[in-house]
Image (cartoon, rainbow, N blue to C red):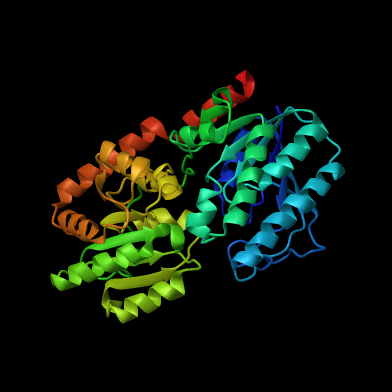
Length: 402
């Protein structure tokens, strides 16, 4: 099958679309990618790339066409708007420089949903069916994660997303709870298919390495990995730590990641005199995370309180489950349901820092055998619902049937 994959992000940027493309290629499909010049997350070109460099390249026998775009720079809202819109415009133009035939068009749509515009242009250019993989629900995710509250802007984003949903043929959704939202956006039910993330092969249980363990502090180590942004409601974690401090309970919060909200959070930690509770370790390649997770006593996932986030399965949840570690959550809806249904740990309501502090204390007092049982349950649940080869088979079936 000849598949055009459209994604604003691709290698050397670290997104799950990379593994999906490589895996489909390894299964014998001819994959061509239309993507942007890599600049996520730091907002500047990666080495070897620029406005003029690398319009086309081959990566692991996959043809990669790269569109210019305006850089993210500091990640301020105005920079992001220009970044998203410039890719939508310039990638749409780039489509007409690709002189190939395709059987399917697959569009990877985390934020921004504007990549769906490129998919529509490609649909009419190549006269084939499009499959839009929706990871965030716009415009609500823009409002709650991006802090955009202008009714006029949200109104126009709502119109744009309705057009994108209408004109793309099939909508794959990363959470089954997206269905009700899309139905309210006047999307036909027969267009919607639940298709979740899987975790890359390197996310798996590994033996703890002593040299890494020595870099962790003594005591109970709770690891948070990923973006430090508005959507993650990091304030909830800080306030939970403050509650533990009141009770004279010492828990180590080990943070792997970065984000636009990091500086503010560090200031809040200093204000609350919680410096001894938090250890910011910086960002690491995804391939390193299983080794780091193996030294954790439990893994932490949090989300902001909102209806849209309650419908979302956080991408890190599959990675956590695949590594077979106990999980602590502060989130609503399907994310919390997965933690509880899998019997892999405990979860509190989103932004309920008092309850979060209580379940952190609860899990920190479990025996080693009880923590191991949580980890086994996590891995079992992952194998049943999110295993990679199973989901790749499902995607091929979707392409063949729909």
